[in-house]
Image 1: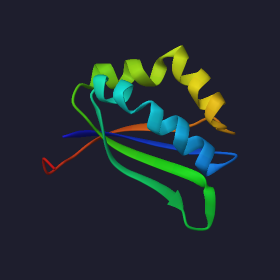
Image 2: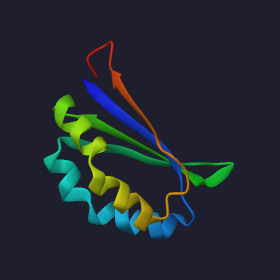
Image 3: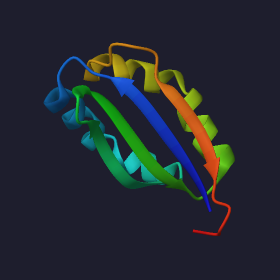
Amino acid sequence: MEYVLARHKVADFDRWKAVYDRDAEVRRQAGLNEVFVLRNSSDPREVYVLASVDDLAKAHAYSDAPDLVRKMTDAGVTDRPDIVYLTSLDGR
């Protein structure tokens, strides 16, 4: 099983979440299946998203798409996101 973990800071969580939620179908079409959306307990403007990945090439294409930069700007992302692709060692 493969995953993608994204971390970024947002100006306003509710604003970010509304834009994120509107993009759910696009993420599904890219083979990204939300596992968790998390906030840093000591900095609630820091957001983490963990998604399982059906197709790693599609996930990379989604992450590299210029449209995603626009969506992040609209959502109030305030820093460059950290995106990490992970592979499970135990098949989960």
